[in-house]
Amino acid sequence: MKFYYLNFLLSLNLVLCNRIWIEPRYYYFFGKSSPPEECPPNYYVIGFNLKLDKYKWFKDNTGLNGIKLICNDWHRTELTSGEYELGKWTPTYGPYFNGFIGAELYSFPISLFIWDDTTLNDIHFIEPDNKVVKVNNVWRSKRAKSFNLMCPKETKICGIKTQVENKRYFFDDTGLNSVAFLCCKI
Image (cartoon, rainbow, N blue to C red; front, side, top):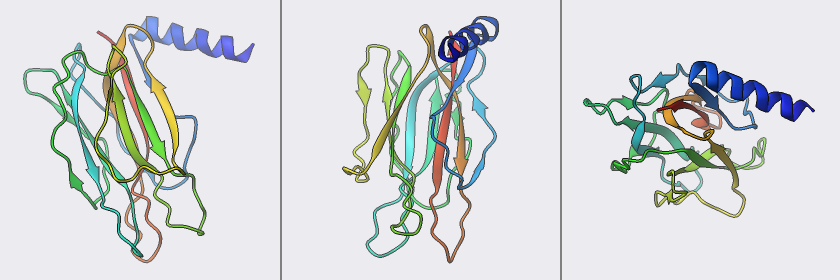
């Protein structure tokens, strides 16, 4: 019964507001939420860049440290929400003129001091025809768990908010921990 009630509330929110946030069901306690960023009204995301930290043997690793989304407005507005300081930005992927309707997140489970924690490590975006746009990222492994985030029908990704841990110097850093996307009716 709760599931149907939740779906009803989500549908009502989408009908009344023409927008809804989608986020993973997991929650990491590392870091703080960054302010959300959105495309201008009636525009959606058509491209992206990822900020990746190379794998380092016997050093602190952080994996995926930032996501930059590019909107389809005249100015090609860039949305980042929050990012961790380590890593380099990939080239821009896009434009994908049909936009994106979802994402697959790849995350390592938290080891709590047994391993070097990295949390969010990779992301693939999903186009309306269900084609998956991937970046050649070295962070995939058999231990990674995947989470799908899909926008409701007739909506596309138009915003982002992230959860990022600040640098802790002498402790294990995780970088980008979670991401949520705003889906808008266009």
